[in-house]
Length: 195
Image 1 (spheres, helix red, strand yellow):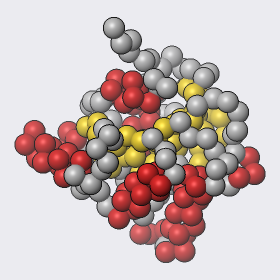
Image 2 (cartoon, one colour):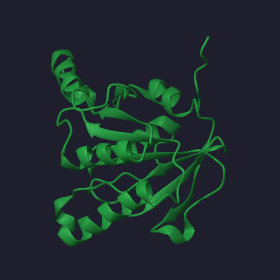
Image 3 (cartoon, one colour):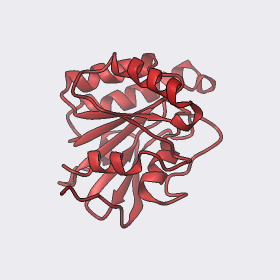
Image 4 (cartoon, rainbow, N blue to C red):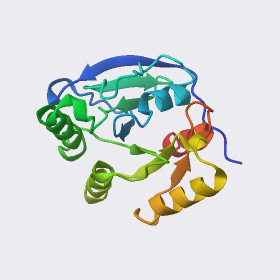
C-alpha cells in the first residue's frame, strides 16, 4: 500500500540570483515555476502547511530571485520567479526569463522534478509552452498543476484539463489544485516526494 507523503517541517534557506551561490548538495530539488499571478506562493504554502513560508503578494511579479526552502530536512522546494507581469517592463521581464531558463539549461542545478503551475481557467500561455519545450528538450521530468480549479464548475474544469492535456506529452500528469481549498495537496506531494 502506497504511503502518503507528509511535510513535517519546512524553512527558508537562501535566495539565489545566479550561479554564484546555487545549492549543489545531494538533496533532491523540486522546482516550482509558473507565470506571475498563478498562485505559486500560495500553492507552496499549502503543500508545506505553512501560511507564510513563501511570502505571497497582491503585487504579481514580487518573486524576483530563486528561493530555496528545505522540506523535512531532506528535499528542496525551489521557488522560481513568476514570469510575464507586464508592469515589470520588457527589459526586466527578459532578465527574469533568462534567469529561469538558466536554471533549467545550465546544467549547474540537478533538478529532480519540476512543478509547472498554470491557471486552470486561463490554460497554457506562451511562456508555459516555452517551459514545456525546455523541460522536454533537457529531459526534466515534470508535472502540471492546474491551480485555482475552485473557480471553475465541474464541466468547465473537465474541458480546461482536456485542453491542457492536449498540449502535453502523454506521460505528463495534470493535477487539478486549489491552494485556497487545499485541493490536490496529497496528490502533488506524492508525485514530487516519491523520488
